[in-house]
Amino acid sequence: MGNMTVSILNKRPLMGHQMVFLTIIGFWVFHALIVSLRAAVLEFPSQGELATRRVLVTLIGIALTWLLYLILRLFDRKPLGVRVASAFIAAAPCAFVIAWANYYVFNVYDPVSVFSDQELGRKFMDIHAELGLTAWQEVAEIAVSRYFFLIAWASLYLALGYARDVREAERTASRYAQAAQDAELRSLRYQVNPHFLFNTLNSLSSLVIKGDKDKAEEMIQNLSTFYRTSLSSDPLEEVTLDEEVELQKQYLAIEAVRFPERLRTRIDVPPSLANERVPALILQPLVENAIKYGVSRSTRPVTIHIAATADDGWMKITVDDDGEDSPTLEHGNGIGLANVRDRLEARYGDAAKLTTGRKAGGGFHASITMPITPRDSE
Image (cartoon, rainbow, N blue to C red; front, side):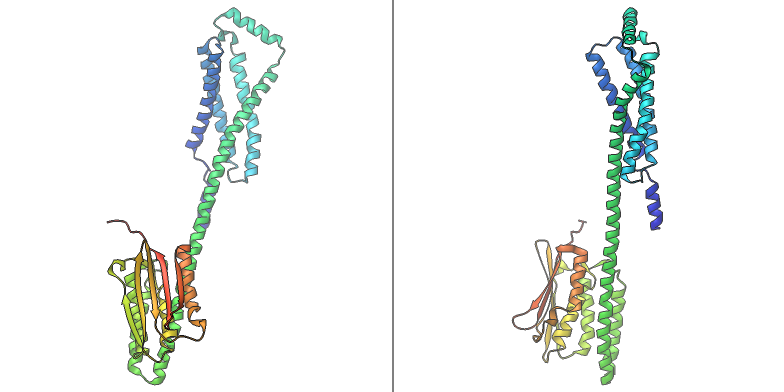
């Protein structure tokens, strides 16, 4: 599918026929107006006859410039240097044909009739003959000016085509960057489940070894509910804060089987923030971290507190525990916290951050600050 898309893009012209035709018409009409204005200022005789012949030469010029465009189209997907060279080469014969047509229309085809005074017309032709310029010399002189005229139009065509090349390259790069970001988000999101499952199976194994059948069965049921909910979501989609908190309640219910006397939970999420969007399972590593380093290492009841607040377009979600202070820095530098940081950076860039640290009275604090996503008004 990707190769087919690239092939179609390569065959598509850099500029549409309509746009090219309008630029050609614009160039030649402007040229005809300037020449007509010059003739009027210099008070050339037979303005009507000159205008008729000028229209004929302009139409020939338009046709040959269109031919030049068809030639340049053959080099649309070539390097810019090749396109520039093809323009300089192809413009030469086109300029020569336009110059010959101009010479024929004004100098060969009944030149005397251009003058209202026939005698004056004959005298002009005699003077013209005395100058000694051959037809080829005059055609060459006209061809030089028409050549630079065609090069000017070709430069415009190449500039517009190059600009479109750049836009297509930017769009392609943007698609690849988005695909890479999606792949990174999927990878980071899928890291959460195996990490959580490993820890939960360890807990389940401990219950089985202790022979606590009822608690093991309860944990299996809670684990089944948790995974059915978490795996049904698209890793690239966001969920509401309320849904994310409910998922963490399911996880805490699993851990409550393991720590019935030590685990306490407290949830403070105002209704006004319940429908705000957050990445799915973004709180899971933070809650799991609090269980691993706060609850499991404590000999007393530990409260895990999940809260959310909003201020001036920003939302702050915190996960705190008041467990015993760990003697190492391991609490704040685990794989789970790194996963949260990476996911926030991949999705929001510098607009979101994770802040962690020890609390003065013991325990650990983790907070996510992220922009509130604007919602369309209903």
